[in-house]
Image (cartoon, one colour):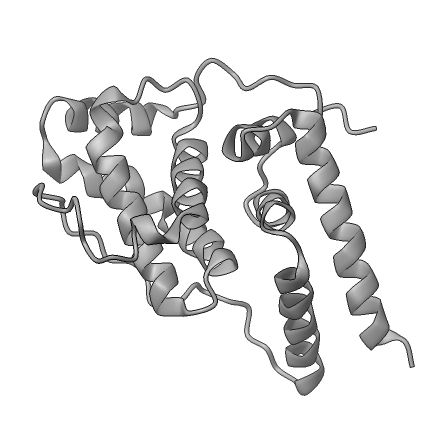
Length: 197
């Protein structure tokens, strides 16, 4: 059994560099927002793409996540890792698309300009078989429930432990582990159909 299942989130998982930029942001330095969040953009965009079929909506979801993070940053205490906190904001917004797809409501503050990458640096796909497998994986992921897809993405792509996934999904670490295991089972069954001759 994975020993990390029962772990509770640490009191603070913020790095010293994040603590520095966070302190500047919380003291009114808007230029510190971009260096604070830039390391997390690729992960946010990857998770947003798991929630939105349209890449433009995914970018909008990330932008709205950044707006909400900017607005809530003064109250952020660091009880969880900054990355976990950002993922939690994104997952909450993704669950209620009407709250963020209306446009840029609530963007009236002077948000530091953050460039959302147009694409993630992906491993080059050299042959048709690799593209086919990737298509099958994407299709299998789309068939998962939102919670399973999010849990599997956070575990397999972002490397979060079950305690951090539990914080994002607002469930217990055991439930987070069960979401990951069930998602893996379903994905493997779906992909195996296409691998068998």
